[in-house]
Image 1 (cartoon, rainbow, N blue to C red):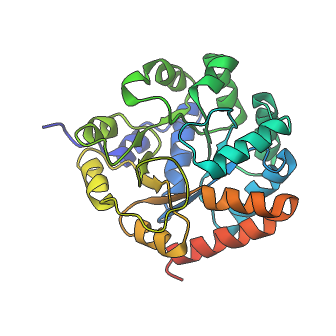
Image 2 (cartoon, one colour):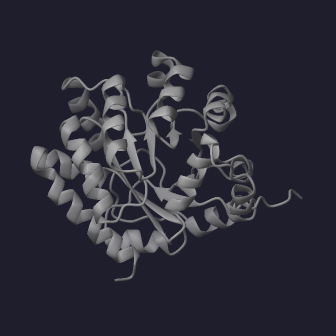
Image 3 (cartoon, one colour):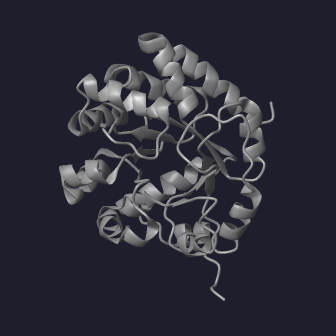
Length: 282
């Protein structure tokens, strides 16, 4: 029987003031320290990079605890039609990885809210894996999610992420079964629990036994578990927050960006605020 990993104690014992790796991990842990974390996702460059920057500040003000920044890719296989369309709009508008890095540099002048990139292996490969990870870490990003890299093939990314202190966030799905415990034991930052089979997108209901998934993780480690894919309503957020450590919402926010374009910031801020209040039982 493997000994359960105490994530919080491990972090406390490893704290070093000048250690970038521990600072980043502690920032992610801090997103879950005050209760259930709300984690919004937005696509960088949709509708523009200027609006993306405003959205980060607005969502933090509305109560977001950690923000996922999507770097657009031409073939986002894990995404449903809403985020696919956002990627297309962002790329068509000229959004590049370098411009996203410039965006992060501007954001970090004003806020230290934990942020992680969500993108695809080809984006990282084409930039140069070590160059990408090193730059992301130096700019103050805290983690990286690559949904098209299975756990068994993560090593080449993980080694470089470990070198520069960027948490490589692992994902588990309802079909992971016996792999859940294996993935949990090596998880960094937080564990991304996929609520539904298929791609991202709002769903009318979530039927996965999330409580069982989270329970299997907690038998191995107390790393935070955040649930995403398909969550869009306050009721769904409340239900997920009852069993998990965090709630991830993407498509519903990206849809507001599509609907309202350059005027979307206030609508997104209001939406995040409503979700946050429900999760706070207000």
